[in-house]
Image 1 (cartoon, helix red, strand yellow):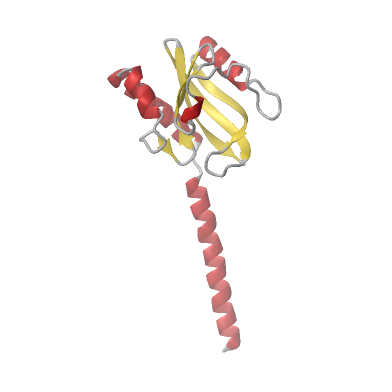
Image 2: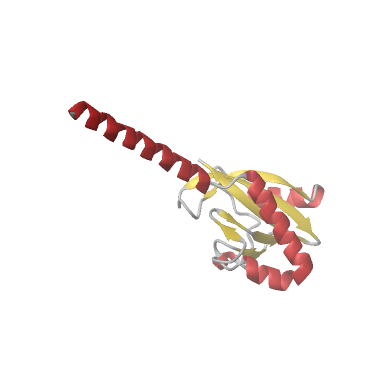
Length: 155
């Protein structure tokens, strides 16, 4: 009887750990979801104008925030126009900001927006969900003299 109880409890623990891993995997956003979020944001801008869109993007509990995904918008001078995870950044010039490895990722984003109009930039940044420094992959698309972006974090 004891062996049966031990096996039953072991099986439950294994199932619980598998379910926990599955839940954690479901919490992490994908690159495809980041691209879809940016495309949704671009569409929203075209339908509602940038002022209304930037206000909506900057609502931390709005429709453009999902897990670690959020929309940010910057002009081509590095000024933050909207930010779904940290509205305190709005209006600040981030042109010379660097990640923990010294990478001037905002400059790289601006260059990509100017030359190709869309694409990916990676750097180290604090994940607003885990509150830990993690690798961030951001996808951006340029509209006029600014661009919108979203990204995912990888541990």
